[in-house]
Length: 83
Image: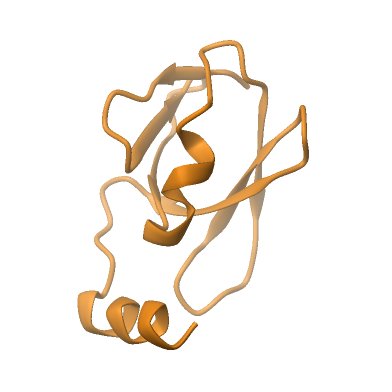
């Protein structure tokens, strides 16, 4: 899949119509993505995220949840503070 829209750093929409909210610590990895970037979507089991987006060109992984879901703010903050 390719990127359809990525005008907000924390959201990305793919050409299949799916939209994803990016894990705050992973946003920097997405800033170099272009509309031609090929992305795979993989489902994972994790406390906070449901999927990863994988950049096919370099294998980098970005943790995501569906765009219409919000992060549990308190838990995320604690996780980011403690690694």
